[in-house]
Image 1 (tube, rainbow, N blue to C red):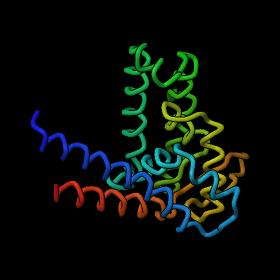
Image 2 (image 1 turned 90 degrees about the vertical axis):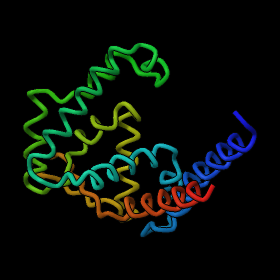
Image 3 (image 1 turned 135 degrees about the horizontal axis):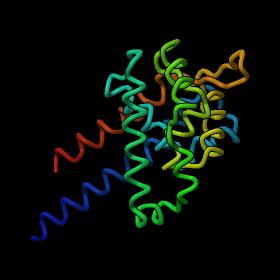
Image 4 (image 1 turned 30 degrees about the horizontal axis):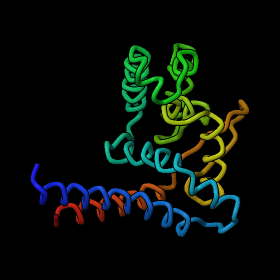
Length: 190
């Protein structure tokens, strides 16, 4: 590899780092509250992955009633593939028991589908934690849901069954999209 290509690779890496850093700054600027505890939670590294999940749903156009079944099926296959890869599980510090808790089953899938059909984009908080389990603990998901609700990035309501349902307001996806476009633009000029 010649030096000029390596320098471009290094510059591209710097654009990627800057995009992650800019995301952390901008997500706090976009917050409806400037409470220090909320901002601290929004600065967590897992906030990027949390937002990435919602951003992916938006970009893929998942907003029809049956889309959630497709997303759950893809997620379950990802869990199966991960469970069959001990090296990947060790790298993520995941136990088999924990990863299998992320599966949508005959018991959990109906509630996931019902919630989504009622309001496309709406997820029961425990099902959101299932989707994010390969990236973060359910406690981290809960912490981010609370912070994102206070920040105005999620609407959160309790159902008659006592479960918490969350739906994105689109703000965090906008912030991530802006950071990604800036990164792509910078890399394209290399």
